[in-house]
Amino acid sequence: MTRRLAVGIPWQFDMKKEDAIALAKIADESGIDSFWVPEGWSHDAFSLLISIAEKTNRLKLATGIVNVYSRTPGALAQHFATLDQWSGGRAIIGLGASSANVIEHFHGMPFQPAFARIKETVEIINILMRGEKLVYNGRWFKMDRGFTLRLTPERPHIPIFIASLNDKSTKQTAQIADGWMPVWIPMTALKEKVDEFRGWAAEAGRDPKSVEVKSPGGVTVSKNPNAIDAGRPMSAYYIARMGDFYYNHLSKLGYADEVARVRRVFNEQGSEAGAAALSRPFLEEFGVAGDVDTCRRRLEEQEAAGIDIHSVSIDTKDPVEFGRAVEGLLR
View (spheres, rainbow, N blue to C red):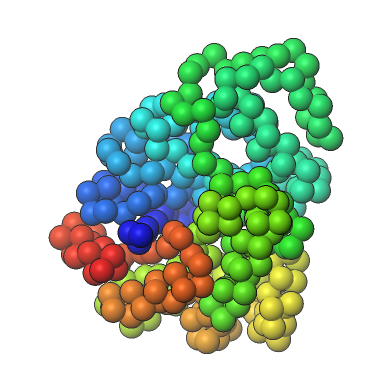
């Protein structure tokens, strides 16, 4: 099977539009499989993806992620159906819950338990993509007028990937999604978690290999010996300021002392000190940076753990260098 690589932009969405489109064009020409655009509280994801769709030919276009609170399932279906139609069938739906901080204090909505809301959102999107009348009676959504999308989707089903963390939500992902985006899983625990996920898919009567898994960590091809440090600010922010969800998750995985130290330093001395407090071994459990050979070895380790789609970053704007790096990673 051909190795599949994914690139994207930072969740802070701090790239210029022109730079993001240029990256996508290089990725499209170099053999990258998919381009993932996150959405936090900066630019929205769909505007950039539509712009990229107009400038590329084969690259799959994914949200990584949009939350299931700030838009209704119907609005999400409209966005994704439009993206899929205008890209010629290249959309991937990436969904998640985000966090209570973002949903309640940016979007001003109650952070209802995400378990049922994600399931209902997926079911409603699938109904609308199939061209069926929307008659639905769920816990959070109730519709009985039989609306249908007033457009013909490019495909009757767009692949849906879900970002999930705890066992309950990840088991549901194995039951209802086409792909899983695991979050904050160290390399040493990756195979165990992927095997567990595929076991849940089998329990649901599905072919375990039919549900794809995207790598939770990043692989960065770079000549900069300190390139891995680029992940410090985001990691520290998630640990210290994104509520207790990620903090508790990492604590359970054996990093209780590490995350407690990072949160304390972050809150007492500021974000830069918090980022600096992260240890190098911690960073290397969740990502790797180096030359092509180093990064390819990490991809091989991820494949052995069951990963299907590999998140990579290539630290160059030169199309020739980028293409050579991709060629090396795919070897």
